[in-house]
Amino acid sequence: MREKWDTREIKAGVSISQALAMLDAPVGSRGRTACPLPGCTPTKKSSHTEFSYSVNGWQCFRCGHHGDVIELVRRVTGCGFLDVLEWFSGRGVSIKKIAVKPRMSLRSFWVNRRNSLERQWDSISQAILRRQDIELFQIKARRSAGQIDDLDAAMLSDMAREVAERQWYYLDLAMSRMSDLYRKELANA
Image (cartoon, rainbow, N blue to C red; front, side, top):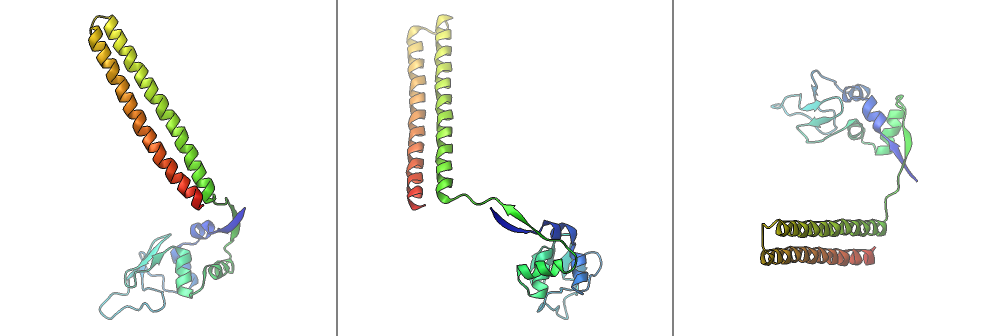
């Protein structure tokens, strides 16, 4: 199994205002302050509160950058992701690795898709058969009750069979198109 850094504890345990304080940047009031990002300085006409933040996100309306607490520290310090993790661990935030389920190979993905399609095809074909059986049973019941004569019953039965055949045709057509697609994708995988 692969491992990756678990950043949930950083994002949950360190707010943007705490990170700003750790960076010795102005915290401001009511979630607004001057932008701490290097190279983003307010103009004389603009206000000094173009940087807005909440507990778990921030955005600078002047330079357009935004993100979470990790992205803030990364942009202010100019460090990479692993350096930011070291920066947080140096300030008492625990960071650990978690196991990650490996990704499915492309071949496995397409085989699973094909198997799923076959299961869907089976369930749809059973539904077509059940519907046809129900319609034929209703026609027989109406004929035996005297609601329709033999000619109408034969005509309705033929129509029910034609509808079912049409549904089978379109189902087979869709299945063959998908099988061709899966065959091509499996050949490329």
